[in-house]
Image (cartoon, rainbow, N blue to C red; front, side, top):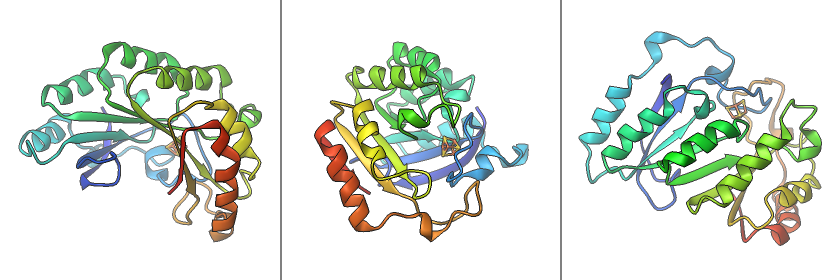
Length: 227
Ligand code: SF4
């Protein structure tokens, strides 16, 4: 596992739980609005990586204090030793939340067969009309959505809406892709370090526009929240 970032405690990333977060290095996408360019386009510096043992030791010594480990990235499903690592975390009695862009459906399927993830979080990056432009395989993404919805596990879908990349109307197409889903989160773009340095505050939607997005997607999913 290439673990390039570690946050010891958070109350924000696993609903209702105290969690630690690890950030894996590498991603198969290049979203212009990505806030983690150091995990995606910058070189991976060996000296900045955390060992699996370091993370597992930390969790072990905080038994009863940390409920869960959130594995995010980058794209964690690119890590060839992800399954054995999650198994080691589960042996400690820790819940696991896995964040994914859903493009590597075969790997998601392998992980699901092991029944080792307690909470799935998938980014719905774009409506399916954009897939060709962003070189996304529509079949893989749709397959992952279906598997997550049928997994019997806790899950959420979310989209970061970026003005200039997404339109308000995209919410309808995204809603159709996740029709019947339990939870969907609308996230506004916030300026900061991004893969495309030209993105700025003008790429954020207004509160009113976010409410409009919420209204459009609401008929398709059970719960929608702006966060
Ligand atoms: S936003 Fe996520 S999927 Fe997109 S490039 Fe960054 S890490 Fe990869």
